[in-house]
Length: 239
Image (tube, helix red, strand yellow):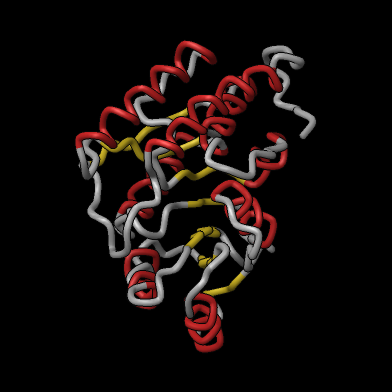
């Protein structure tokens, strides 16, 4: 495990037309950091050839590993990848909407401020409705949990393995990012943000819609109830 410094967990779903190019585009930026790294790619309930393409890439590059999540779910995919990761520093990100160059930049911010949770804060989204929906979710996070961050769901996110193991994350759906931010705050882990202008999708279509947004808003209330059993400073939670 000590041979790998940074593990980057990359969930992906139905991206057969561009996943190879996306994964290959991480190599040059990460190599420039001078740190050892791995990509832990998590095909997420795929209905196309994405898993086969990732397996073929992994066979030719030992820095790429695959950890499949046939059950689906953003949170479960991230947790599956983190469980398989070997690095002492852990990162996860959205494969469709991340500029690989943001990962080394965020890693630099993390190293300068560790121990911390380092994350990207998107200053622009790809559509007006997404802008409004994200703003509402961030306001809800502040009201319910006191999360004073600009962009709860912004990825990449980077933290140490030791911090991750203390957090006991359990959210298998879209609330994982909120749970992470809330628990980091409770643990007293500083949260530092790297502002970016946003990034256009590599390909495919977003699965975010009014129904999924409503699930997130309602789910935040359920998360509040689940975490209310634990006092400030205690990151533990029972799934």
